[in-house]
Image (cartoon, rainbow, N blue to C red):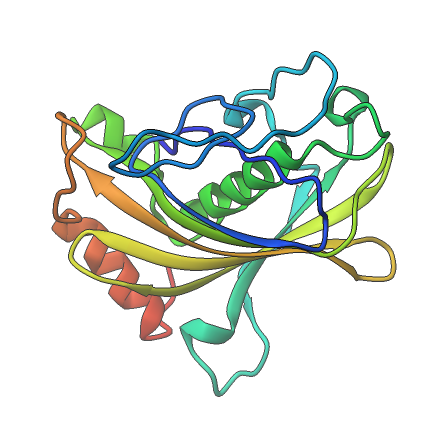
Length: 211
């Protein structure tokens, strides 16, 4: 399963790029082979919930923007609603939670094409966020309903690439955009080739075949 990760930025209009093989329940980070550097962000006592506690209110089936297009125009919408404990001291959703929303969308997207990310753990492997490039556009507040839209972009021997966009309902107001890379890990948490059965399902998806 994907490991929870988080990040901080005081500027909702900024774009930041982070890379990390493994990230777990932090409120700020910048990982590299050198010593980590923290980005400060004023906040009240806050503990981001685990990924599995982010529950989708409803999930639409996978569909096409255009029947003549393939994987690039296929996406999954997951509908969520902001909860009180997800807010920071300024009354908006804490920045770390947007990444969790994207993880939930990614997990639901994979399940929609017949791949359960949790199965990797049972097989001695794991999925982890390797890289994430984000752009904050506008904040979410208490009670806001929103859609997490996930698109699958491509895959290689050990990585999957996807995009994630968040829109506030009911007017589809853009809130957040991200592009991410997820890597498949072995039992020692080192990058490993994606299993053949998963690649087969990804190939079926790209070719527009039914699941």
